[in-house]
Image 1 (cartoon, rainbow, N blue to C red):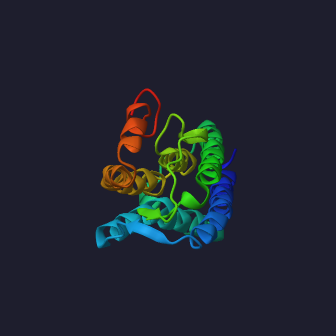
Image 2 (image 1 turned 90 degrees about the vertical axis):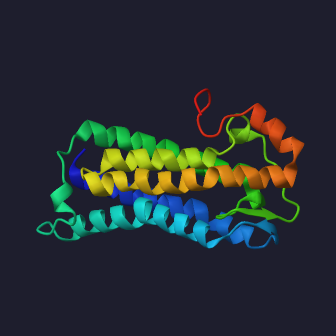
Length: 201
């Protein structure tokens, strides 16, 4: 594993992420929204997450691949270790698998923001059987893989900071929204599951 290959892995994984997400985004638009919590705060959290998981690392990777003499965020470089990049590749692969499974299990219940759709069903099977927010688990894995693949303190760790801001700023509000929509059914689901990591949180 070389630094260049690690950058290509990151770009390829990002493209695969968009390929997975596109059909779900298109399908969700066909179902009307019943309850929504799309506030200005929610949009700010989404922008912070996008910046950390997308804009900063992509600018770093593309600028480095395009011009070997220009190192965007060069002041924050740290040594590249091939074994960390291999580990990052494996983590990213699992992240993408989990990301795909969450979309498949959710179907048209999926939404990019805090929305409850018409005929929305509480999904408790598949990857949702033990974890309430496996899509967030997939994003945490992405952020970890990003830190392992990119030898830069800013570009590598911006995903953890950006997505972490979204996660802790949103997950409790999301659970309140689900409890409002599904009542005791969701409270019972909460009692027998974990948020993102079985046995820990």
